[in-house]
Each structure stands twice: as C-alpha cells, then as structure tokens.
Amino acid sequence: MNQTINQNLGQTIKLNDPSLLQTQAFIDGQWINADSNETLPVINPANNQLLASVAKCGQSETRRMIDAAHRAQKLWATTTAKERARLLRNWYELIINNQEDLAQIITAEQGKPLSESRAEITYGSNYVEWFSEEAKRIYGDLIPAPTANKRLMVLKQPVGVVACITPWNFPNAMLTRKIAPALAAGCTVVCKPASATPLSALALVYLAEKAGIPKGVVNIVVGNTQEIGDELTSNPLVKKLTFTGSTQIGKQLIEKCADTVKRTSMELGGNAPFIVFENADIDAAVEGAVASKYRNAGQTCVCSNRLLVQASVYEEFTKKLALAVKLLKLGNGSDNNTNIGPLIDKKAAEDVCNLIDDAVSKGAQIVTGGARAEAGDNFVQPTILTDVSPEMRLFSEEIFGPVAPLIKFETEEEAVELANDTEFGLAAYFYSQNNNQIWRVSEQLEFGIVGVNEGIISNEMAPFGGIKESGQGREGSKYGLDDYLELKYVCLGGIE
Ligand code: SIN
Image (cartoon, rainbow, N blue to C red; front, side):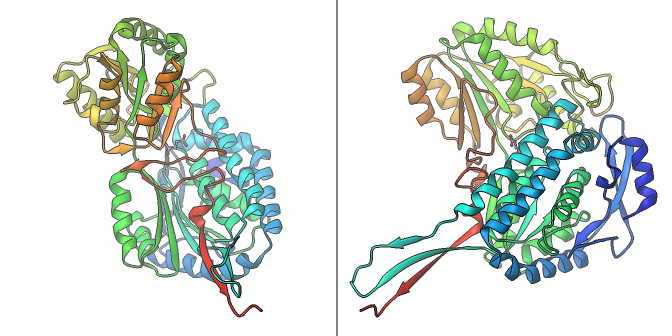
C-alpha cells in the first residue's frame, strides 16, 4: 500500500483505522499499482479538495483480474454453502465494526450527510448479512418424471465470473448488493466502482480480504472507464455483468455483452411519480415526499421525480411541503446538522439548474430554492416548482438533484395515466387512505416497486429493480440469488 498517500489521507479523513484507506487495485490477493503508475484524483465534492490519488488501471490490469477470478472460480464453487456463509458473516461483522470509519469515507468522497452515510453502511451491510443466510438455502428441485424409469432433477450452479460495475451515489451499498449474492451463489467477482467514489469500494474489498475470503474471489480495479468496461464486456471468461447506473450506459453495456452472450442484470434510471390523493394523510405525504425526494440530495434512482397532487389538496400540500423543505440545512455532509450535501460535481449541479431554468422558461413557478447555493459550486438549493407540465424536460428526464416538481391532477385515472407516461419503470409512490384505491392504483402502476403511504422502500429483504427501460433482474430478497445461478436439468434414466 502507498504510505505517502495514506499519510495525506489521514489528514483529510479522520479514521480510527487508517488502513481502510486503500488506493491500489486488488487482484488475486495482491494490492498493486497501475502498470502505468498513473493515478486518478479523488475529490471531496463539498469543498473540491483532493482526498487521495488511486491507481488508474486499464485493460491489462482488468484482464489479469478476470484471469485471477476465473482461476479462483472452480475452487470457490466447490466450497460448502456453510463455509461461504461463514466468510460472508465475517465480512458483515467487520463492516459493522468499522461502520463509523466507512461512513466518514462515504461522506468525504460522495458528499452525503454523515447520518445518511451511517444509514448506508447499515443498509449495505444488511445485504451481506442477508446473503450469508441465503447462501444456505440454494435448493434444487426433483420433478415428477413422465415415465417410471426416469428421475428429473434441477441443480442450481454459480454462473461463473461476475463483473460488477457500480455507481457513485451509494458507493458502499450498491457494491455489497452485488458482491454478496454473487459470493453466496459460488461466483467470483471482478469489480469496477465509479471513479468519483473508489475509496468506499476499496475499503470494502480490504475488509473482505481480512474476513478470509480467498485470493482471486474478490478483485477490484479503478481507472479508465472505457478500457475497463470494454474488457469486462468482451472477455469471454466473464459470464455475467451486473450494473447500476444510467439507462443510456446500461443499453450500451447490454449491446456489448451480446457478443459473448453474457447474462446481464441492469438497475437503471427512474422517473418516479409520487401521487398524493385527496384522501391522503397530508402530513404523512409531506414527510414521505421529503424523504423520497431529498435523500442523498435527490441523487437516487428511486427519488420521486414528479409529484402529482390532486387539485383539492394541491395548495395545502404545497404549503406544508414548502415549510418542511425550508427547514432542510444545506452544507458539508461532515457537519452534524447538515441535511443536504453537495451534488457529486459541478457538472451535476449545472445539469440540475438547466432543468430548473427550462421549466421556469416554460411557465413553472419557484416556491423555494431554484438556483445554485452559496455553499459552493456543487450545491443546489432544495427546490420546489409548481405549475409543472409534461412539455418541461424535468417531467420526462431523471432530475438527480434536490428539485420537487409539482403537477396538479383532477381524477385518479388522470394521475395513473400521467404516472405511467414514461419509458422508465423503477419506483412509484402514492398516498391514499382508501383501501380500494390502494389496490387499484398499486396494480395499475407500471413500476417494479410501489411505495404506498411510504417514502423509503429500499431494504435487503425486498426485491429491488425495475421494468421497462429501468432495467432487468432483481437485487436483494429471496429472488436476488436467481441472477447469479444457472439451472441445470439432469435426466437420470434406466431406473428399474
Ligand atoms: C439507486 O439509486 O440506484 C439505489 C437506491 C436505493 O437502493 O435505495
């Protein structure tokens, strides 16, 4: 490990265990520099300060990492489920024991408030705990045979080497959500975290090594996105790619994986409607809207993107939402009283402001916020817009920022039609106290996840994933292992 870099890091991120700050790639049980010795800067989005320089890898390191994972695959697949469960449990416990340090790393490199970073470590580690338990429940099947002299069986076997490409918005949880089920199923992994937030991922892999997970089973590189991505998608030794990120990149990856017919799991963009019906508990709806809209400064795929409010409660909801949003404190995530941190970088802040400007130029009204914040280049004020209509870009585009666009509707049919009027199908929310309406609308919404009278829907026990252009496959839950398993049908004949 690079001592000089670590000493610098010690000054910018205060940790109980500075060895969590890894800056090299991890391949076949070894921490290594890039072949070129080049590095990538990691920047704190709250103040644009340099946090670290990490090894900038490319195609050659990626190929070596895939070879290592391939070599480790056979042995790992033959370990007992109980042994894999034990190692995952060790990893889970190490994550929990280092929760505060890992949260500090997330806030430093990603910007979210410390309270949210701590919650992310709990959330992310829950996937490791869950799949350590699920590892022991990978059952096959015995199928009634068409003739008396045959027995038909289904075996479940690991798909093989899995490539995991993860985003910067949840640098810890999006990686555990992929590595844990892969390892539980008996797959080995090659990981490529977002270049903006590699430190959380490297710390997780460091803890996986300490947990006793054998060399070659978990590997990670950071660096040249194009080169690494091209190798991960074209190398025939990689049998599956799992990706969380934008729909645009997801489509490109699916196309590239087609050549070697890799399996893919895609957790892509969203455009979540948040519907408030007139019989809703309005205070609860405001609380849910704040949680679902402003979590992580609006940078989640399941953030509500369009708030559809029935005309008779539109004014009341708008007033109460504005009161709640004005209380949110914007600032550096490491200050304990901050509720909203910066966006990931200046371009992200500019993109969000362009969406606001487009809406305002087409008739939207600013209730609060509406511009960049004084706190710094990467900060956008928590914003509410009214009089929003479908021709504004933010009606159809994922905002990925702290902007709540309010749209008025008259009838349930109109609300459902507006809600479904998108190519995305990840998450939807609605507030209603009418049982019949709750069933009707839940069934009519074309989304993979529906929150009813609830703004926070993510947890390890439930299947997370979307339909339409929001992706394919499910993460977490009892279904989450399926994406990492092949079914093998064995027909045993000649039985007397
Ligand atoms: C995401 O934004 O991709 C994940 C959000 C979550 O897990 O809640």
